[in-house]
Amino acid sequence: MYFLSEKYPWDFVYDFKTSHFYSVEKIKDDVLDILTNQTQKDTQTYHEALNKKDETLCGKIKKKPIKNLCIKTLVIEKAELLGDEHICNTIKNKGDRQLCENKRLYGMAVRNEEKYFCDQISDVKLQADCSERVDSIILDFILKSGKSDESMCDKLGDSFFRECIKKINKNQKDKVYENNLKAIKTQDCSLFSNKTDKQNCEDTALFEKAKTTSDVTLCTEIQDADMKKRCLQQVSYTNDMVFFKNATEN
Image 1 (tube, rainbow, N blue to C red):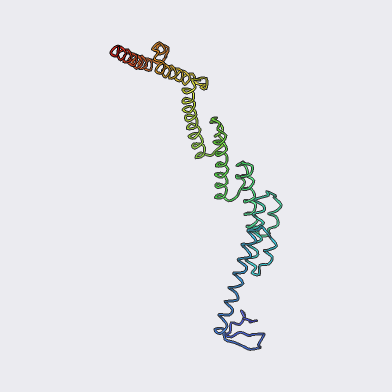
Image 2: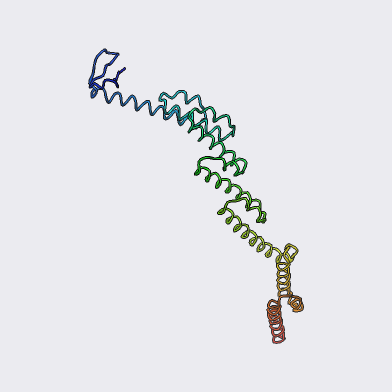
């Protein structure tokens, strides 16, 4: 065991075990090895304590700064996870206690999907990060719900609001397109609530049926003028070719 005097910075140290004085240069490497090994052990215990969420492991750490950091980190994580406002009061340092309270509010905001808690965070950067995190969770929920009500986007911040409106409109278009394909295949245009989309579906269904059955009278029931014209031309031409083929063959 070596004794190094801070009050009297002599160029030698005293070894209590052998009762001898040694030069600092002679035992310097031994001292550094001891300190380094202890730091490594404490660091390993620190990470183990964080992984296991076990405060008792923090007590086994020898170096006080690492031990205090270990305890403080676990207390803050506990406050963020549970949301209990009394947990942060166990921290003596004012700055660390405020950090704990901010993290606690962050956790409350995320769990409740409510930016009200973010607004109470004193750290501006963490407050902004909290609001973005909550907006992201809300936007994800809106899109997964499959609802197309744009008013659901109102509670979001500017960038997330624009993204929400954009994706809802895209989802609406995709849904109309899918319904259109389904309606044409099943000839069930009642899938459409919009009058224009429903009429377009019915005209398309008549066009497809006219081509399949070669019944040109179905074309006359089409409301859209351009589609009616194409239907009459195409079905009539097909019928004429059939008649021509039958006439030449017989």
